[in-house]
Image (cartoon, helix red, strand yellow):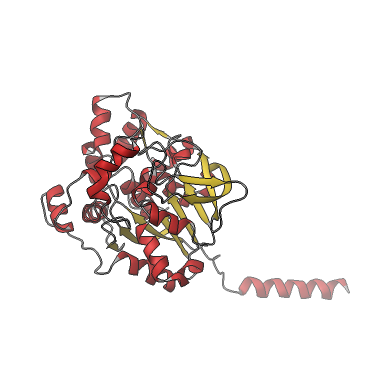
Length: 366
């Protein structure tokens, strides 16, 4: 009986060997919609380009809104940095130009007198003149006509349409104020369960704020929008607040190494001209933070996060000394609050190594 059995096995293996070989399917890339108050280089610009070059990420769009920059400036900055990187297939879509609460810009000086200031002098668009258009912002910044153009659609509608077209697949990286996303979920609440997850740069849960003693800039800029969004029952919410962002210091050694990595690419020249670059050149002991870049790095490699706590969260949208404050509840949250993962620490050494991976800036997919 052994010989016929062995002969049968041999025939089976021969047949299997004759079958065509099929490669294992490659894992699907993470679809990311980047919602940003875009600036040049650090931090939004580097976050965008890091995601754009990541082999496991597909940026389905960059939506812009006012915050650190006016929406017109942010749109121009996004387009220019994509142009410099040779990327023309990522749609850039302008969105909200103002916070949800009326007259925030007009009343900002008075508000600051009444509430006080945190440890950061930066006021974003509150302290900047508004450009006439994104084209005017582009030509003022770069002295030439743009090669790319934004999509002729409002960011809120783009968010709604993109989520509906990709149910359960879209990660929204909300690295600016929350106005675009807040209006999207108000206009189309059906998209809430269709969003895979929302990852924020915002808040300061276990430490003081930076813009005011109580509040971090992004969520202070539009507390009403932030509260709408964090109270929406998304499948998953992950927050990078000042609790982790102010623990990862950007030092001169990191700046110098990144410039060597970038070499003669346009992004290197842009980085040198920024406030951060000019300050490092004058003061080698200067330190800064990289906020939004941490979110991009986490999307590429979630194992970078080393300390994550899950709490219910909320945002105070009532004017007063605590306006814009983010709140975490380990137990007994207020009615309507949703759970979120709050990242409190990150492997900084691995993060900086990722940022200086030369292939990321050559436009190559590993």
